[in-house]
Image 1 (tube, rainbow, N blue to C red):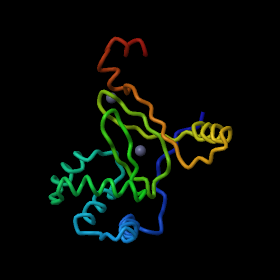
Image 2 (image 1 turned 90 degrees about the horizontal axis):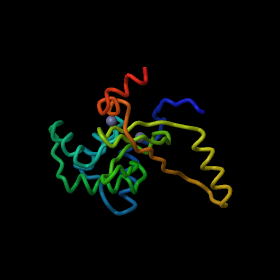
Image 3 (image 1 turned 135 degrees about the vertical axis):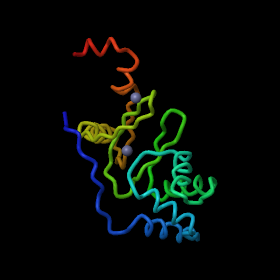
Image 4 (image 1 turned 120 degrees about the horizontal axis):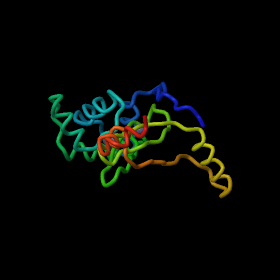
Length: 164
Ligand SMILES: [Zn+2]
Ligand SMILES: [Zn+2]
């Protein structure tokens, strides 16, 4: 078993803002002020967030960006490979893709917590399966769903005693 690897951002030559500007230019679009505010806010810290959390977060920070701009910009950032979309139950969560190492997730269905991990075994399995099918893998998604330790303890206090 591989040890969990700490997620350290990968150094990039271009800022996410520059990458996004180039992506938009190719499409004949501009990096407008609300989009600039959004990308700076999003790339401030790595986390998993959904569109509504982002809207609430922007409001708290006193930044005025309309909900429709948020939704549209999130879609564009995914297309530009700056953000990665995760399907968690029936919602979409987003996280940095650009400048961040590839990793997988555990998702707690009770408290919604998302935990990141890296496992070499999964990557090797991906390569082995791809080889078998003559496939060139460029990525994969692996999501473990279930109940985290804290929520399991809350649910059945007796089981906690069994574990000791
Ligand atoms: Zn939980
Ligand atoms: Zn993640």
